[in-house]
Image (cartoon, rainbow, N blue to C red):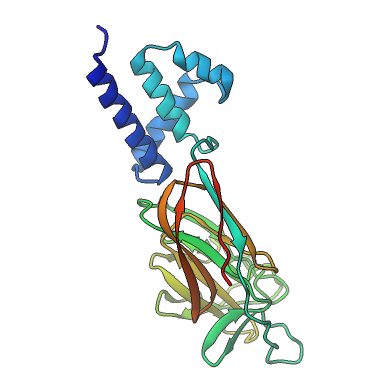
Length: 270
């Protein structure tokens, strides 16, 4: 039985709505798994002209399903937006000790990285996040990544790559914890779940010069700038959002932006 024009329009609207939910991470894990399995088992074509020809020759229902699955693919970039630009970084502050091993410094109560770095992120409603894990290693009595940005709900492991003890802790409002003293062979690797957005300042109870920062964000779209303040965010959903640039614990710049499908927007933070 052939679908009526009204039924086809309804199916197409539902397909578009579901595709947008996939882009914004709003589907639950089970729904995403179903989509991924269906794609791996039933769709052997690639994006491009060949795919378009094959899709156009399919019955309406099959065509809607294939379009939805294409849009659900993480490497499918049609209709995705990009924002790029430059953040004017604060002047570099002199480290408070002669050996200048501080990578995160505090002056007048303001926490900042040295050299200065920005974290640029897109603020909006992007649905719930799936559990993620990442690492913040310690090597040569320092954090390998002194500034780490993660999405809310991420578990961070703190591997010790030195031949000495470390003891990572934080008294920050967003996350208060103390991992205790541990060596490089400690298993499982000491870790912490960061389930609240905010800034978490890290310290080592043994090595006072060791400092780090974890910026916990309620968004999957973020990136650190390069030393000159340049940044780029790609794979973004179209729409109206607030773009923010964190430069230190006292300064977060913001701009209201509108992202358009397939377009690149330039946004500078002077």
